[in-house]
Structures are given as structure tokens and as C-alpha cells.
Image (cartoon, rainbow, N blue to C red; front, side):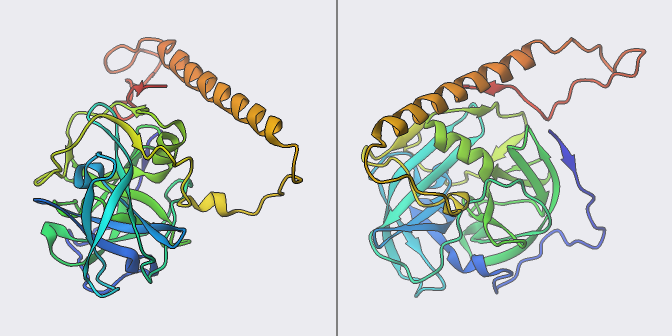
Length: 306
């Protein structure tokens, strides 16, 4: 899938604001990890504790590792936060980590949406570890089957891990991670949901030219999905807050197990069908053929781990 958007001529390359552009920007924080400096945002609360999302290349992938978070709209003190879940790969587009702070930071949580980005968006973080500074983002492209989101202005070091929020509902739709061909770029939270759900390295292969904003990347980066053993789910997804009909008490164990088994099997079948569809695509001659077929799309990419 590739979606192109026109870029307004009057849009400035750098449009930093010292004040939040949208309400969810108040949940932003600076993430400090030894010599690494990045950004993050509050995405959930559980049991009186605060959950923060950032990049794995900012916080690392070692479960239990302690980093420091500073919340500019809650006193700006350095507060310890530990890595409780992370996913990273240098083969596919997967670079995120969830941190837990053992106190309730008095700021709202802006949860993650699985809806595709649309309309205008905003972000707030620490470019070159300075700030926080907010920006309005103008979408250029959404490529690689909805995984990579490209926008203007370009992203720079220190902004890694910044949330990209929608003006529509102020949920987080993306995670600022890379630069690419003069654009800023990030993962859609929809693609992070798929990795979170599978608890594995799955996704679209990284394209050439995608640059990780890693001037001071974390030293403890490993390929894989990692999580505390006790964690089965985290309250960070907006769509899971939708009201559902609760099952009657008692006698539901077998039903729950059967549903989970069927869902896992369905995921496997979907992955196989995707691979089969890609493998069965007819070869295309350079520049297309006489029937007007277009050359293959370089912005789709192969899948890995499905």
C-alpha cells in the first residue's frame, strides 16, 4: 500500500514550537540512557504505575534495565523507569520499547491507535536533546503496507521515540524512529500492534536508505521480542477500551482457551496467505510491458517472520 499526499508550498522545513500543539503532547518526556538521549510519551497506567513508549534504540532491549525519564509538564525531575517490553530488529521495521515507572505521573495517557493515520498530526520531543519542542507534521507517504509513515519536516537525533498524535482524537498513531530521503519517518502504531500481538520479530523488511536516528544509540540492543514473564497484556491500546459484552462468570476457561487457539491458527494462516500472494505475483519487465503494466512497487517490501 502506498498513499501520497501533496506538501503545501508554504510549509516550513522546521516549525518548532515551545508550547504543545495538541493536548497529548503534555505526556511527552526526555529519555536518558547512559550516553543516549531520546524522547518518549505516556501511553498507559496500570496498578498505580506509568507506562511510557519509546524506541528500543533509545532505551535498549534488556528487560529490567533502568533509564531516566524527565516530564517537562510534571516537574521535570529525573525519574527511574525500567524496560518491561521491547522489540527490535535491524532486518525488519521493528524498534520500540515500553518502560514502567513505579509511580503515577500526574499527566494523561495518550493510548495507541490501530487506525491508519489520516489528517494532520503533531509531535513533541527533544531534537538534539533540547526542548521539549513541538511540531506539526505534514504526511508525505504511507508505504510498505501501512508500516512506514513519512512526513515533513525531517526528523533528527534526540526526537527518536517521540509520539505522533492525531488531531482527530489525540491518540498516538505513530512512533518517530527514522529519517528517509529527506523526510522524517516512523512506524505506525498499527504495525507495532501486530508485533505486540505476535510477540515476535514480524514485519516488512527494512528498505535501503532508511536511517536510524542513532547518534547515541543504546548499547544493549538485541534482535528479538522481549518482555517480563508475568506480562500477558498492557493497557496501552485505545481500541481495547471499547465496551464489550462480558461473559457470564464461571465455566469460561475452555471457551477462552479454544478462542485463543483458533486466533493463533488464524494468524498463521493469514501469514502464509500473504507470503503465497507475494510469491505468486507474476514477474514484471523493466518499465512495464506493452499492456501498460507498471514496474513493481519499491515501497512495498517483503515480509519477515510471518
